[in-house]
Length: 255
Length: 220
Image 1 (tube, rainbow over the protein chains, first blue to last red):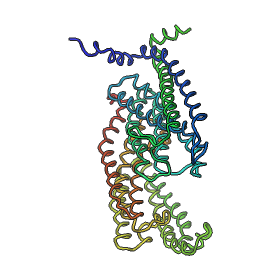
Image 2: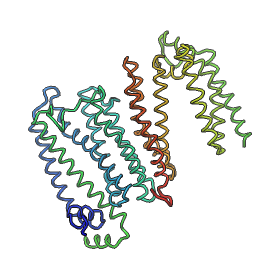
Image 3: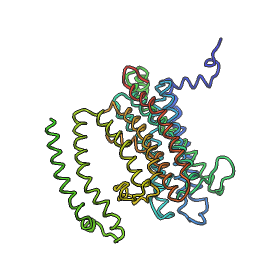
Image 4: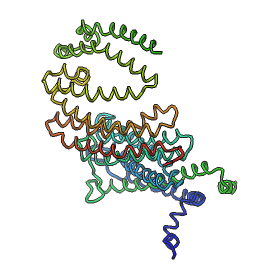
């Protein structure tokens, strides 16, 4: 009786990715492609957004920061969800690579959250008249930044990296409740931040000439995230497994 | 050792007594020297300041003794006393004094009145929200403490971990008080607050247990 593992190539590939040497080879091979794709799409998206798209009828040219702010905001939440998922897998099945991916997501997510907050502040000053306001969305996004910091801090406070990753995974899972609060905050409360204009289902209230650069840059951000994740995970993997033979072979190959 | 604690109590009595004396005897002078206030605001603040001045001595003695016990290692007694006095003494008395007997701002919670200028009609919903929310908050504290128990020098890390986790409780708790202030029903916010507290209560113990087992002989 053949198991699904042997028959289904996708499942087999997924399992193989959990093996450190295989992941290392995979990451080394695919990293540059993701990097270049991200760079290309970023260039296209920025051109379409900053040069081609027309000025806003209310805000003029200052609205263009949306092309950095919104993809970063989407990424900050997406990465946290992915991080929490990896954390759950690491806790339940104790897969070492899941722990490493979990740890590698955190700094990237923190960066995107910081970019979201900073670009939001820079955008808020000319449009709202203030850099900051303690309304629901801004406060919960700031909470997300602190959650990332907490995860990074807790994981690195432990002497044993694997224990630290598990502790931080518990923390990340407890903090998942913050994600729906951020996402639905503009619907549930009267906030200073504007409501949802780009909808997943149904018609978005944003003009196509602005929507396309936004979606292109969002895709570019995701590709960049994969590139950065592979880069970090590969490095962390090599560091944690440095005593193993395959690491010596891999490093030996490179010179 | 215990004599040393009582000596500190004497110091606290003298220092706090001296500091509190002007607050009790000349509150207008104290307030005017720090703030520039409208006469109506000054009026409202006089009695709370007198009460703060009177209570300072008791608070100081209590704090010294509590920390002496904690330093000596008798933490369980301190915890039980603190919880019992909060829930069985302060909260019921505050509710009785303020809204129930209608004694108003001064009798209810002077410090609260001073700090927040809270209208009396908001006090019941705030006490309810505090009761529900602080129970949830202790669960969060439990998880955070379990995760950092094994670490040395975890003070700042604990604060960073706990802060974002408190936020949903704070949001809905203050949302309940805000609803009453605007004239709406606080039911939705209080129900969501209760839901969060229930969820936290259910999940905190296993999460804390898992956290404590990390690095032990029986990892989670």
